[in-house]
Image (cartoon, rainbow, N blue to C red; front, side):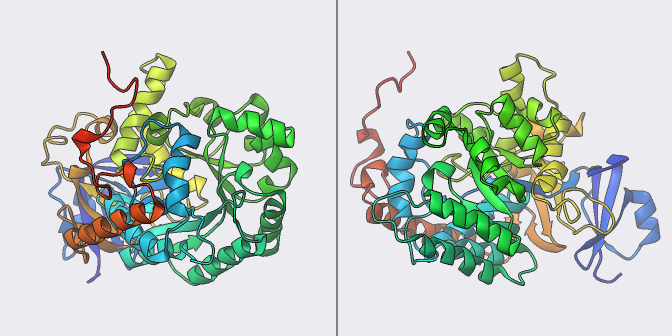
Length: 469
């Protein structure tokens, strides 16, 4: 086994049936696949010549699964924090989306993909949203993920209910172009995207459902994100967005939906009966004041749920440890019960349940022989993890991205010693800084950005109600 690697930790949190946590454990992998998981002494004795990574003080676990994000937002974080979802979209997302290019998205995907890898994410489910028809900007996300070596899925989150939108065929052509770009890629797959149900014409919705039937495509969308969506959908369709998707046949296909916050009992029953998966994105939901997903209720009904960062303009980063901690804290305080959710629950959502939500559980999400070697080693010599009393709780509430030592995707080393392998992060940041400022200027929203605008941060007006007294 000359090309094999043995990764050792004080704990291996394998997330596998019957062997979720192994003290003083190790993972052996070769040629991109896991060969064995078990006690370090046993694996070392059986493979004495194999390279060992890890000193036995850290934590080994499967790569995290980011179930929902938007790489088109990679260059535009940190703006319009006082807006609710629709206000924030009008101030930032729609203007930038109208001028976003494939190169903007590629560089944003590289920048935020690097951030994801450095926080232990190895699989990302992306939805590119833009309003620059003909630019094929969505393909930039595919370019960036492939260049970084991340595992993922990319979709084009179409919306066409805006002034100047071209015919529906233009949007369908970008789905086809993205599917063609990803055909044959070993790590990055395709889904058809619908940005929002209320953001598309009835004809584009119909064409989308038909394309899923014709091609066998799975779907990535948003559902029940804000209260206003429920009201608007009932006015337009006489039903909630979830009910409308069920009635029109979208839910007959493999679907993952971001958010699923404002769900009626009927909605929840429909999600469960149609085996629709949901992505819980607590940080973005709190920043935009969208609401709290009924996580416990959905899980009790058997709905597959994963965790997502959401996009860089609404989170406003791609650090998965922030998502882990926020998930635990949000549901404890929402229920006013400290036992409402545990660190073990959160880590399952971040790994094996996230993989199930994306239909990838046969490949990733746990460390088991035969699965792909998406492996993360957290450094036990950091202040956060020097004293591991409960590995589940401490990954969720103690660890930060600073603890990530090594990351392998499909057995290939992508992070080593806390540094990205094969990419110059400083050079990438410089290019992103240049493009990010230019994108905001092209979008005409320089007043939202001190990077692109003439003002200074201390010149910015503090919005009413923005100071705590």
